Image (cartoon, rainbow, N blue to C red; front, top):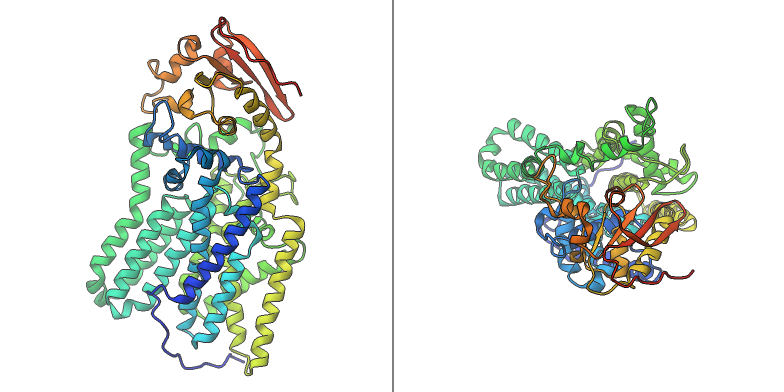
Length: 561
């Protein structure tokens, strides 16, 4: 039996930001703000070490001994940091982490509105508007009510921002696919807007590079098959291709010019692969899934399950993901652009297997938390799949009572799923909390001691692991000489650089030195005759030692615990 078909009625143009889409964004903004206030009051905005790093990368663009755009570095893409800068000009917003939260919160609301628009527009082409609207509201609810996303969007992590750009890119591409036969201004506008969203996505996370490639290939195939419309849309298509390739091309060129290696972000000393090789045991896999595609796939898919539910509910979401894909491929082939949201399955499987990107899960060996949040990238696919399934069953419902039963059943299953997550605590929050305990303990004690130093004193410190110390202490980054002051274009050595000079002769450049056992500063200080003020120990972290470089200066007294 097939669901009964109804004649399509005219719907509002998808290109207009209508009242209903705005309402979704407003509801999401309310949820965002309430969650932000809650986690801010509990001091949870800076649990993720990466969130602290993102904030301080943005801050050092204007607060550094050597300020400028080169402070953006290479491993992480620049757009999230650039968007944070206006909100980090305030020292209070920097220290609290609020400045890093604002772009994520805006992206969360925009992502919810985007998923609504995507689903409503796609399904309106297949049925009457009311079932499409119901499915669209359900998809927005699945997305915006996810407990892990609700927490993550209060932090400076880049996942909410990327998902918003990706969702809108797919939404505009789906509109282009529907409108291209008319070859009118609407189709051209949708294609260019898709390109702009892909440009932003590619400057946010490397996931966007695969999405841009997939959309670019798909649009090229369509254009080659439809030569008549290609002539009418060739101008918009050329702009789209330029936008889709601009970010990867720029980033490769930037790395080639500044670091003398176009793939510095992938194989340089700060890349995921290089960091993993430092800790790997020779002769054994560096992590589960290393050079093993099936295991890598299973770990990423499991991380997606853990972000959606606890217990049996996890398998339900896998079934939803699979059923949604089957439904689109075999029963709703015109909805094929929605399948672009399944691309994280491919991207992260390849990343875990070949790029030195591990995912550790609490339910599988080695029974720990690391990059579990990556599974949240499947949330848009889960939302779209669930909405497509409900829309399909609404087509079978002949009466209002049956339609109501379908929607209520879906909402009850969703509520039960997310309630199980809240009961156990969102796994992204648990990951951040557990992995931050020893780091925060060390940084808090060290920051308390650094606050006792004279307010105009200068420091030498390696900031790659514990820049949060300065953030907690409220010490401007411009008072610190760090590895960020190294001139990256000087390879392999820069003997005349500020960082290198300070390591060689700290007394000539700074008043105090902060060294963590094993870091570059500690190795440099071992060759100097400096006086130790105090040593700070924290379980699970290397000892931190504070030195002063001028014996005539008064040494601060250590804090007594």
